[in-house]
Amino acid sequence: MKRPLRPDELRVWGLVAGTVHPLPGRAAPRPPAEAKAVETPARIPPANLRPVAKPAAPRAGLDPIEPNRRWRITREREPIGARLDLHGLDQDRARAALEAFLRRAQDEGYRAVLVITGKGVQGDGVLRRRTPEWLAAPHLAGVVAGISEAGRRHGGEGAIYVALKRKGKG
Image (cartoon, helix red, strand yellow):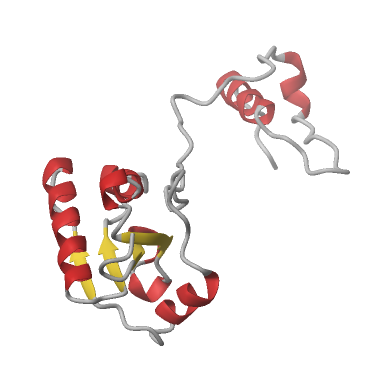
């Protein structure tokens, strides 16, 4: 036999039920019979939740890597010339390390490199968010051809493939 709901449980149910949106073609869930007597606010916004943005999309002025080339890099048909891990660096050091790394990689003739940014604590790390902005900087236009999120085997959302231009091309 079910016990009757207490007033505080009815209040919590009302708060939860107020945030539910039924699927298309479905009716909203009915509250328990005891809940009809308790007044509940229609909807309470969630407490300070911010959406997690996917930073993998390139900024204006920076193209994504061509799909066929990205496939070749992911499947290791086209070699990843070098890898840079930015874990543990602050923004200033990470940016300086990234720029020096890209210039060295281009000088050595690499066509694709992997930059590991990590995902951050809640999946929206500062380095993960800022790296595409840094790669789109005008002074790297002669180095970076495009970027794409790395495949799962290379770090997924926590890493970026960077396609490099040939030396001397601008």
